[in-house]
Length: 85
Image (tube, rainbow, N blue to C red):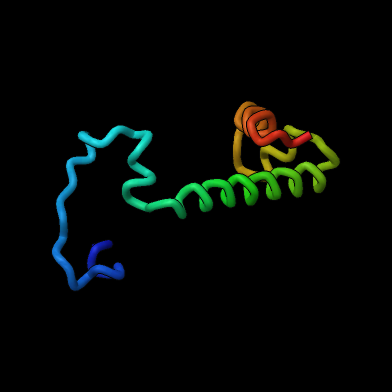
């Protein structure tokens, strides 16, 4: 169980009605301000992986998508969203 391995394992387990928390607030309520930093770092890691795969395949997006284990359409979407040229 996650609670047993956390920093507050000795404290009480507090049940939360996740349906009552708006999805926009869920991340910050549970993980605090560090969540945004982790999200940004995740984008950086994904961008680096895409650039590396594109470089290895000489910018052949079909081959890069296969190397990354995703569809061509998903790669095209991620390239556009992350601003990879």
